[in-house]
Length: 194
DNA sequence: CCCTGATTCGC
DNA sequence: GCGAATCAGG
Image (cartoon, rainbow, N blue to C red):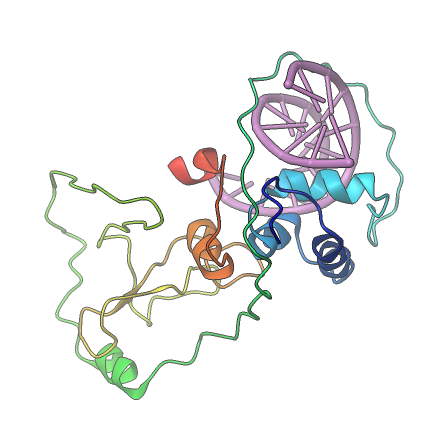
């Protein structure tokens, strides 16, 4: 595991195959493997010739014009393949959180304090979810990120609430944090910047 | 808008 | 071989 250049090691390829056959989406697989984009996963899948999955391979293949392409970025290191942690269903919250959630919420005031100076000097590896975006357990829906924010015993306990990847409990960013050991996500800037 | 996989092609 | 950019579709 001293492979600095991100390569598709046998283990990674095996996991890719397994996950793909299981029907996981490319982005989900990318998040689990870490260090690769969903495009990378799809590209690899095709190269391995195991595309299609269960779909009917009926594609007319329309010749599309590919105008231009931006310059590629540099390479990245490969973190030790620390066995992928099985994301246990994180829907289990403590009694404290439950009690807090049941607390008569004074008013999450839709009339939030407008005109916020927007501080957000977020360090890399962390994201700041605007409080107005966070949700209580009561507002947490299936398609929302379950990343806990704050002290579960506090009435201010919230969940990220951002859109979660389908089939995943977290949003794109938190999925990366949750599933990547110490990852280096190189050009995720596009996905994360937005 | 969000997402999905498919494809092209510069590297 | 790799994967970003792009396309096409749900």
